[in-house]
Length: 106
Image 1 (tube, rainbow, N blue to C red):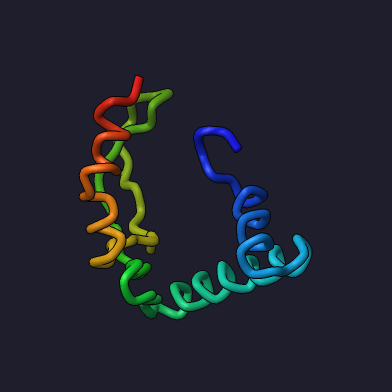
Image 2: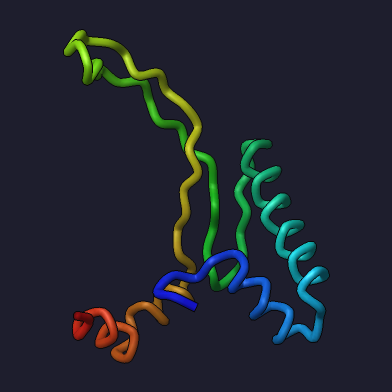
């Protein structure tokens, strides 16, 4: 595993921790991601207590410029996914051990 966790890495970890083969773990992970996506598309929040909440938010239309011509234009509004960390996740990130890994990073 490199510096970032990939989907393949996550499948391997889930398979090992849950006693599943990689195909089963991949299917389970895909199902969870699909449930989160479907929930947001329906305009609802997906909350995993202690971890956090995914929710759809409206990004309003705003003025912008075409980078090639400089011509002003309106960038249309759209729905975007947002995430708010839960208490347990935030506490883990606030921990001394977690902070020292980032502060002392080279």
